[in-house]
Length: 277
Image (tube, rainbow, N blue to C red; front, top):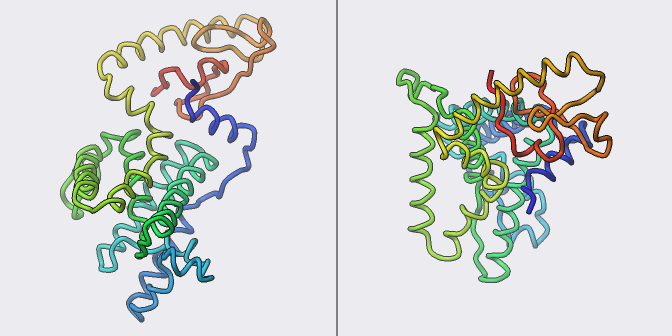
């Protein structure tokens, strides 16, 4: 069974213009505007939050406005907006515009679908916020940049992976303490995290074995690059060594997650160890 990310990456490869460039800039501007609106008229936020009942009554704008609502309406909200803006931009650079756009909106769509299901199946109607959409984005950032340090409260350096553990504890708490079926909302809203980051998370958990494989992989890649400079072909897989000359039926692609330009065949584009230097 193929990794679901294979289809996402293939789609983005075939449609390089797909996506919204600088998506988090627009999200941050919209969130800041709602934060300011809350200072002027706190009641206005109720007309923007997602409510299944009100959506079905014709207030369809709530499907789009709810993910602009900040998690916190105090001064901490501005810090949160900037933080998510920063990690969102980093993920867009890491994945590419297309993949990041799919990741963000898939989380929002999953939240909407489950919210509608809870209303239609159980009659539950309550305001939904984009908390888990942004939490999924933070978890993805922590998977790819676990050792990056941020200044907690502007003076305490903390690695992202430790903040992720705290966020995971909050996630587990909400799943355990909330009644059914509300407690499943965090799980459903972050299924996109498992699709996009499950493989990378598994490789991280494997630890030292992965590190050893990466060292051998880099040595082999240097050998392949040397051979490539002495043979006439356009693309060569840096794992198996097959070329587009010897195997014209294969599809060759460059990995956007590797540092530098590294080519892989269709069988190894999603199963190789990424170059980090």
